[in-house]
Length: 366
Image 1: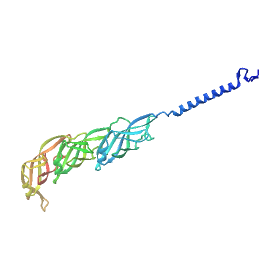
Image 2: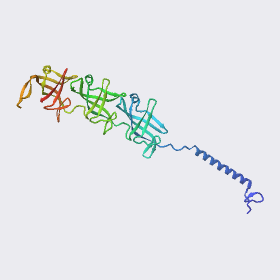
Image 3: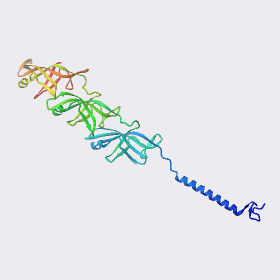
Image 4: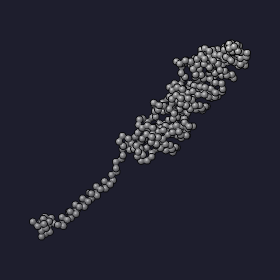
């Protein structure tokens, strides 16, 4: 069979011109479909990245109180892209005249395996992060990762030993609170007067409840709260620094009571002996530390050695021996009796500040 016959038909069936027209139409149609398909693909966007969150604790270090006061839960900051930081909790404490600040923050970023990319980098311990708002700009290092959105804060009772002026001692009372950057961080729970050692200074035991951070090793103002550490306390009326004597209690050890003791000043000048009187007291504020309830005076004795080596006990020609009974405010503990915070026993020397008169006496009995 001829491919094209004498009439111009393809295989004797279709005119060649008509066949070319049909093929051209099919080609145009296929090209159109391809163009439409290509346009649809160009309009597709890449899938949105999967986002996740984690919580971190940031130590912002010491900040001016004005900056610390401006930091609030709910503050947000984004370093760019999908990353965002949201403050969820804030804790402050006094440090270096300002405020030591810790914040809990939620980080949002692209999910990567079991963590996130915040600023294209996973959050790691020690990494420094910025927080910038219209009010402040700070940075802090990551102390912990994961967990809830609140800081591990708690109240830690401590007993502080301190020495302050008479004026300050009179101002310290239970119920007073300490605030830093507008937040309450400490409350005075008890004040125990230890008296003085003969000047205008007063020794006190001050029980305080501290707002601390950390579960196993509570910290206050960057200091781990333990015995021997110095803790600052400042209210609207006074400022003091006390050494931690006890952790977990705001009262001195033992039970507070009074003890009648016998005290002796064995070589008192006539002027000193005459100045000691029944009814003399040592006071700190409205607390009585010691009260003299009885006084006896006799000639003091002295030891003389003769030329032949004999020893004689003779009355002193001038000095007197003063024997006193006194009511002392003490604490009875499992280890014995304590007066003004120190253990006393027979033979111990105690100092009494009786107004304008200061004496040192030896405990004869208690």
